[in-house]
Length: 371
Image 1: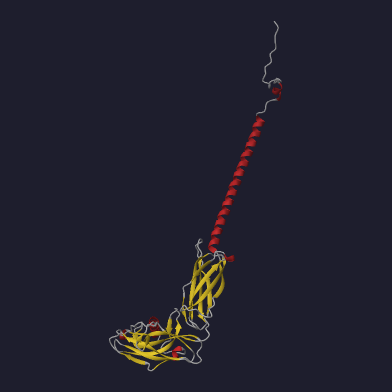
Image 2: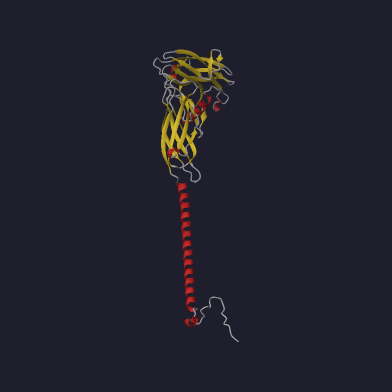
């Protein structure tokens, strides 16, 4: 059963635009297409789009074209749509009973035989219930072929190959275009490179809590205390999210500095899928989160630098102290030597008394004689 569902999802996801479908090995030569039509053939519409009042009824046509060179028997029915985890548009499995627009569509017959290389323009009726809620009701019309395939273990499994065209039916009334953000998680992935910041990753679920299919844009902004080093980025556009469904996604900002405590703001701006102006306009969704971002690599670098500076200061002080001590020893030795020389080389007092009084004047005295 798991293999069947996987194959169905792949085929339906690729072919809800109405392009031809290749089938399994049991019927490799069979291909067919589904498209909106008139009684005279396809009319170029990309999807079945309606705006109807509660209780309204209309008849429309779907073209089923057999591109193969042999007849093909197909099961034709309508079903409800949902948003996949990957953001795609898909329909309920064949064995799931529709409860919304898929149950409002009826065909005269569910099984059709399409001749080789031919087309059938098949009428169907949409009857909107009197109590239908306002807003968008997405679904699709499917032409499916039951075949057999082989799973990874070599076992034969039943495979339901489906080709479909989308239905977008809006029931008149008050619209409520609303998105909400749930299960928001923020994390900071530290970079151990001291010159670089790390990424902040916001992961969240966008829920369509209104009644209009919406897309939108997410923006993430991160800053440190007092708004320091603010960085912002815009995420990928949101896919079409159907009413009641959700899509989980993430937005990433790189090179965010670890400023101890970061403040992150996530903003989701809803928008109409078709570009129409919605009334009332959908409100912007804003969420705030804080997270720790300790700068351990930078603190380690600062610690090493501080240690290096401290060691340099200590070594310089030691050198100065040793130089001062050496200078003190040299001065003390010189003083001691001076004292020793002064004590050993001083003149006698008697010799000093015989020095003429005018010996230090630098003048000579001459005594005249008389013949």
